[in-house]
Image (cartoon, rainbow, N blue to C red; front, side):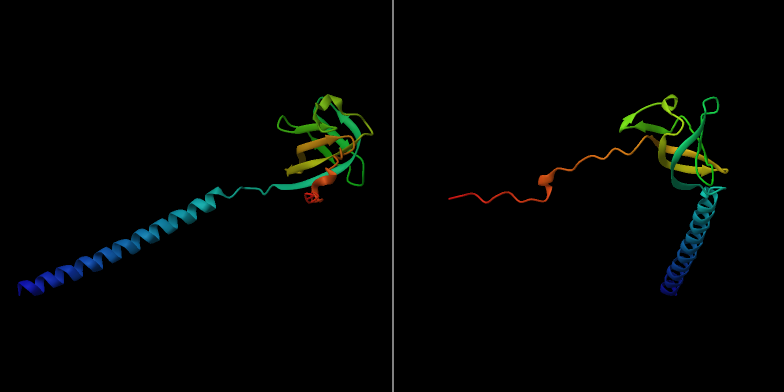
Length: 139
């Protein structure tokens, strides 16, 4: 009789630990799902390239109006990286009619550039020896 009680206790403990493990797993899965849903942003942020020529400059609001069908307005922020001829520059160096290009994120219908380039793109030459093999040594 003592042996059968021991076997019954072992079976009962195994079944309860299995049920406890299943309940814990379900609880963790529910918590992970709710965490993922909570981290989802309220509005999606689109990122896109832009280019054109400067039609107007508003230094008070730090906006540029670009030429073209859409007449896009670009709102410069403190995080915007501004360059000209490969070097860092400031918003005050922008000129009307100048070529401009960059990459921006669209928030609430406004374009906020992550980076912007004034003037034509600087083309750097690559070394000509990159694809050539050195001559074999002479004997």
